[in-house]
Length: 419
Image (cartoon, rainbow, N blue to C red; front, side, top):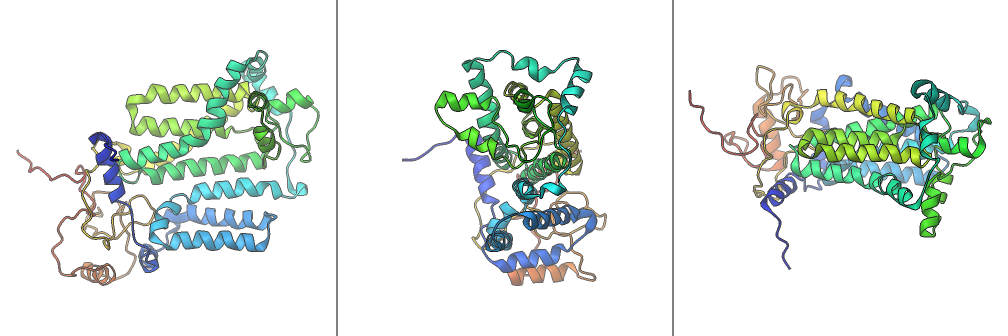
């Protein structure tokens, strides 16, 4: 049976597949690392990831062999080019997940005081009432189900959907910025939750304003009604053993949904009202299910905006202003060719012009390797690439399917300018 896709989907999909790295040669990755070098101004984020990973592994109460397995598995994934193109951009996300999981093992003597009354007090001062409390006074199964869909289902699926849409339908490189903004926003949010633990609304409903301690378990809040509706205990089990039970501030549910809406609105503005409708419904559901106060949502959305616009400022022009169509699909010339690796943080080498612009049209060589080898000439680079990747060192510098397109040219033939 054959599956026929419309050309509007088929062509971008095939084009995205053609950009995938298919090499399993570790030497290719080692060569790239040597050529890439290290610059603090450019790569400090990886140093932060490494420091947090070491801290997380240190406090994690798991066998040493399990920790070694994580280190070996992740290092191997980075060394193999095929897996590296997925794991390297996702490093911020893995750092966030590792810290989130390991936070439950932090000794109680090192943990800060849990704030119980700060959030409801600020809620009343800023908004004149406890908005979350007002939304939970009247419940019914229909509203429970409506709140559960975005909070308990879409929230966990949406990041993968956004990444897939960006990979297929956006200019190359968009997924890398999505992973960085999404991962570091969540990482910063978890750090704030650990340093400034606050009780969520379900605690106020269950315990009042009595002081909290780290021996208390979490609660599914309004999601317990979903367990009762379906006759299960999934949410009760999950939230009772949550690594950060007092992580109400900021709301990462709000942060994730806002980040998804911002990226989709930027790259696919046609459907902007639907993205923000989802954000509005999810904001409501977090308060209705007694997991967050309104001030938590405002903090989560503000944190997201800060990270989104920071990474937006770092995007090249074709991503900051994504008006040029995605390059059409062109078949691979050879299975041994090394394709353009825009999706990862370590793309291949390209020639820089004397003006400081890369031949791919990106300012400061963005999207290509930055050679730090003093005295290395362009001919030496071509000869080395020919030796490692195959091909002729003296071949004419023509365009092939894996060259970076010129600025404003996403792979199609350029039309001569007529004055």
